Length: 219
Ligand SMILES: CC(C)(COP(=O)(O)OP(=O)(O)OC[C@H]1O[C@@H](n2cnc3c(N)ncnc32)[C@H](O)[C@@H]1OP(=O)(O)O)[C@@H](O)C(=O)NCCC(=O)NCCS
Image (cartoon, rainbow, N blue to C red; front, side, top):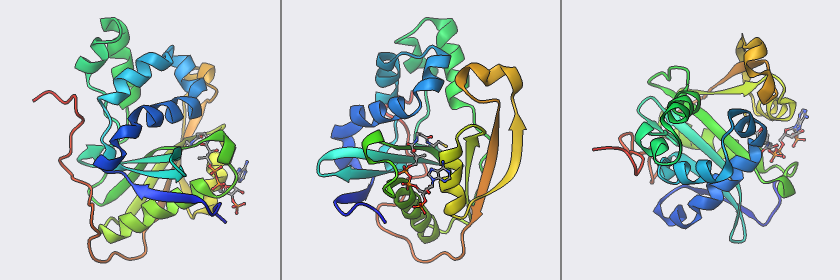
């Protein structure tokens, strides 16, 4: 059961003031991968600031403190899409190109698919149902918006996340092996997981703007 004083909100302009907290929460949650990429916290923070589409997310708050985030992607829009131009402001061109490829790499998304791209819960509230509740909120939203499929990728060593996804009804449909290429980042493969959405109903307010673009998106 979710801790009672935690509330879940759909991302909107009202959450703008928390963008650096969102970037920090994601960095903490994925620190081993960031470290393996040689991506420093300040660089990630600055690049994420201008690459984040807040409408593609849901947040968990305890009081005013951000304690969880889930970012989603559709065929036409992503929670985080790093522009090369933005990365070039913070690192040299070789690194910028490397980060551009590594951070934006994603399997093709189908028209009726909602992809869970990032899920992170602050350490101090883990194990209290926050992750499960964020996923549930995404699923509700997906059904209301008429999506038929939820999907995600989870690395082979992340047993707690896989456990959470399985308990939430996802199943592994494909496993990819990366071998030594990603060992430094703490994993050697990834599972692609999916969950079919039972039914879809009317539109909810605060729809994802399928054309929403990151702030830094060049015109
Ligand atoms: C993965 C993560 C989001 C889980 O968030 P959380 O709020 O702690 O998860 P919950 O408390 O909602 O747990 C949900 C379920 O997962 C299960 N679970 C947790 N750890 C598990 C494990 N090691 N093995 C099996 N199941 C596990 C729990 O049993 C729980 O089910 P229950 O409530 O029926 O007992 C959180 O640990 C996190 O932010 N990790 C770092 C970032 C990350 O790995 N993100 C996912 C990337 S794909």
